[in-house]
Image 1 (cartoon, rainbow, N blue to C red):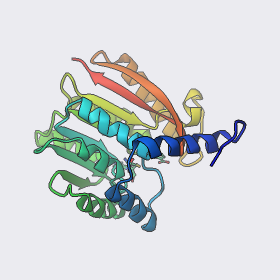
Image 2 (cartoon, rainbow, N blue to C red):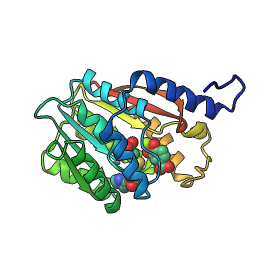
Image 3 (cartoon, helix red, strand yellow):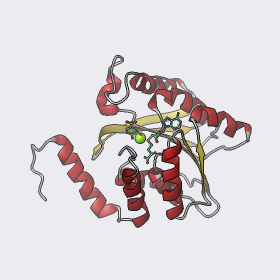
Image 4 (cartoon, rainbow, N blue to C red):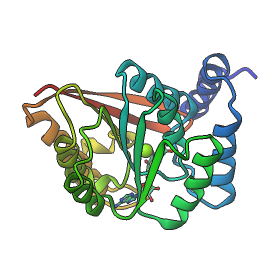
Length: 234
Ligand code: SAH
Ligand code: DHB
Ligand code: MG
């Protein structure tokens, strides 16, 4: 298929995502089945794309991560990518508020062979994070923040508590088609708390002396969005 210059941007982004994925992200039965079963169960199609999932895996490997915390499991697609980066004995804890999503994720994670590696906890992340802290969980080597965007400020605070110098905190969806530029912006899917939450997250990251951070815009099959990366330094 040839996609001519001048084609709708989103179509070109999607075609380029396919090109990248065809070359660099080999088809994988467990990951494809995870997406298929998530779709069949009616989960929203908001998992990271395959090439983004592989980026998460590579970041975790570069990081030498042995322990990973994920906020927002959905059907476990990103969870499986991250779990693949772990060495033998590595552990991943993932938090999901929706019991129905968690059930789908549990099956997907088990089929991918990570039943013993991944601990899936069901409930609002802001309730589970204090429990994790109380249990002495962490520090984690990598934390992937991808749950409800209005709570990103709280998630960043808890992530710091569950970090050590050297921890990498990754935040998904920090651009939202550019809506973050507008303090009054309204996210058509969820309302204005989303954008306020993401903007407050940027402010917190910017003023937090214990992290060095950047954010990168992404375009692709899931539109225009971005990842924030914050390295904990102190
Ligand atoms: N990380 C997934 C996508 C996550 S989508 C992937 O890329 O494959 C965001 C998820 O966060 C949804 O499943 C949603 O149910 C969950 N979520 C929303 N609010 C939450 C909360 N308060 N605590 C935990 N999870 C939440
Ligand atoms: C939404 C959530 C995500 O994590 C994502 O990557 C895209 C969209 C959402 O809630 O709409
Ligand atoms: Mg996301």
